[in-house]
Length: 532
Image (cartoon, rainbow, N blue to C red; front, top):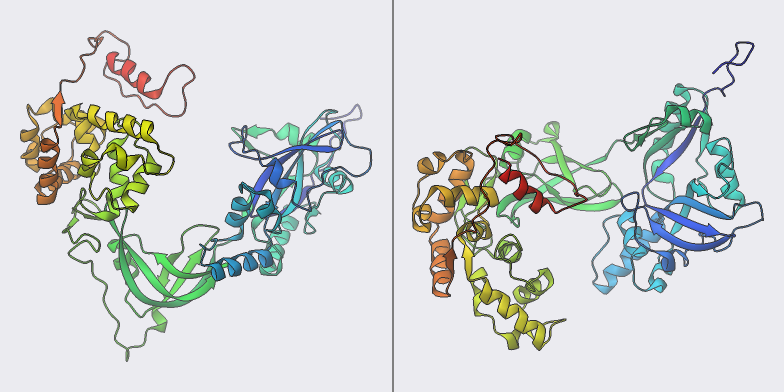
């Protein structure tokens, strides 16, 4: 933009530099200088109401200082838990035998969501303001730096580390200097934020999607430390996948003491050439699960024998054979319906709306039933009685009776939904429908070979292997016999309208994602299927 003499009438480019605080982003709304509400950032449009809790934080002004503020003002900032307060909180939790927080950010987030504001008040949280959202009088400053000075004058904390730079070289120098003193700061940071200082230039630069062209985050490198691999255990995930976990000599890294780290799978162990007794580098960034990055080969002592790491033959929880799929990197427990490690998630999936649709048998009730050993297998659902259910938390005679009715109603179900409910790895609703459309009976599906399964369009070697393995397992077959004993029978899927072969969509593949404004994704899916 040039003036009449040909000179630019825009400000020169300067940059506002600030630490990237590792806390919880919040929005605070003031009217006539009084705090009206506080909310978490949420999805950018809707957040959680945390008004009662933010009122207990000393660095959140309940009334703005001075009198030169807009009638309506939205202040954006980050609530953090200082490292000292985090250490004290975990020390107290340890004494009481309570669960420890992973890092200060999680502790701050949990503190803001407490039902009792007194607990929030005791957590020593701190607010740093970093910007202004809405004001009733429009812009109140020409630069980001000036906005922060106004906020400071109204009683808000702003970071003492904030600076202004006039070149990219100065920006990099700021980032490097900030990273070098990262450990000395009273609260966690995970990088720096660089913003074009002048709002006029910010407006010209604009946005790409939801990201501003006038700001960028400079993320610091993940923190790493060296320690010793003491052992490797194998854990069973909710879908039966066997995951090796490194047991480490405890080391302080990324703000917490780390004694465990993920190893992902056996391929990763072979790639690292990892052996028990090795010196290893462990990395941790934010609340990401600690990871073994590499073996320090130069630290290997040839006089001390190291132990090779091998995958067990049987599941460490239920002793079912471990299935190793040659086409995949995963090892998996084959005892899908009997493995306690998979039980809660298996039952939740089995009872879900798209599976057996047992209304009222929700996550909390399932967890209670499993924890109290009232349900030890998915088939035990069909032996539940109303008086037992009525004794569970938040249940009564009427609610229990409704759940029992829903369990009874689920006994007559489409075969495809029953197959989906079994939770066979990689077998979703579409694959279950392919199976029931291809085979005449459930017996044929049970006894089908991998080769026969791969003859079905869209079923490849991995899915075929998973289906055949599931139906070979004797315990799974015993469960199917029990389902039959409890009265599970299969009905014809409801006939739909005839597919429109002349539709413009016939033969095309469509992906549905996000939220649709006029109908559910299931309804849209049904319409698309009818359109071919």
